[in-house]
Amino acid sequence: MAGHSQFKNIMHRKGRQDAARSKMFSKLAREITVAAKLGTPDPDMNPRLRLAIQNAKAQSMPKDNIQRAINKAAGNDGENYDEVRYEGYGPGGVAIIVEALTDNRNRTASNVRAAFTKSGGALGETGSVSFMWDRVGEIVYPLSAGDADKVMEAAIEAGADDVQSDDASHVITCAFGDVGEVTSALEASLGEAESVKTIWKPQTSTQVDEDRARSILKLIATLEDDDDVQNVYANFEVDDETMAKLSA
Image 1: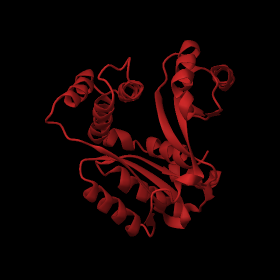
Image 2: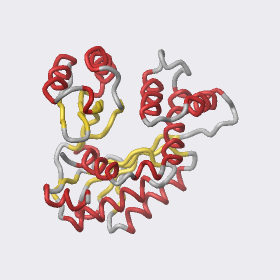
Image 3: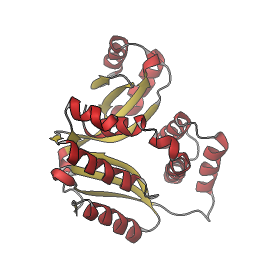
Image 4: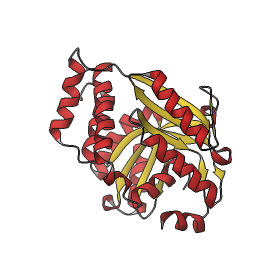
């Protein structure tokens, strides 16, 4: 287990999302608003909005908050957010991709650059690291959906590319363009997913020691604390012993 999934599990085990629920809801609402503005406010006709709402519900976001975010897209007084991707290298030469939704590009770029610089990393140009990643669909199911064999069989039949099962969840990946079709097929056999999103999956990972891993996790935490940052991906991995120490 490497990079994105690995550090996310560490964050979850530390209860970090519970402590930042308000910030998380704000980011989910921003994605819902942008999705509704770019398409239609009807989730049945807007795949991106449908996924955004599904992920918001998975995080127990109240229905009223979800509806307000949708309504905001229809008003003329709401902010206009730009989708921006930043790429660079963190401690130990680990490649990092940062996705943001911002109403002020200069502010966000300055904050992201400062976080990279403070960590000893460097922000690069767009495309400087993304060529080492694949854009894929990620569908997550809780362990209650079934054992690893059942989920694997369902994923194969649905046309997914891979399944990673651990003590926290089942993570299914598929081609970027197939996420809607695969999700629908999985719902028929496993029920509704815990989350469905498109992510950056590294083609290779960089092995790092405990000190480097802690520095990277600190950088990721700093980036994720920024209101404009939606997602952070890093292509690092650690051995089992180091993973146990980080999770403690």
